[in-house]
Image (cartoon, rainbow, N blue to C red):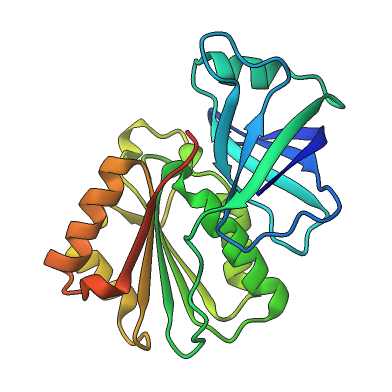
Length: 239
């Protein structure tokens, strides 16, 4: 890994309480879709080390680096939110092993809860750009559409890239102010079996908070009958 100094170019909300940060991409920074980087704030954040790891949302072909995070009330997040556009900060990376397999004849099933979507955004953007022939399915669970980061982009990707299918589900529509005509309820064994029917020898990737990752591994192996050797996971880096 190497450390680079970059500038904050833009920030934008991508869901309720979730913000994407756009950084300039330094020369020589190369990464694979699904990898992460550390973001190091100038001067540190009070009570914390001033650095935090985030999965990279942008794809390798894009001219910027993007990460997204829930804007929780922590010293780091407050300092991050207060950074003016044009401010300098450091990044360290890339690192991480949640990377799609190379055998295009085997499908990839991506399972994300909430902000765990971020490493998969890079994978899916890259697959669309490369016109990949690999079948990809995303199982994406959120409480409400308002909470689902990048949902509109994912829906557009599914329309544009014929090898990608989005299966999104909401678990708390009683508290939503938005309409939703998709699936509701939790991702259980039956949900997984329906979603993967007909897929060629899928390999599964799980990203999200530690409790979700542990529970979903159990759902896949114990309830959906997936071989545990075909499940790859990484506890999500950045809230």
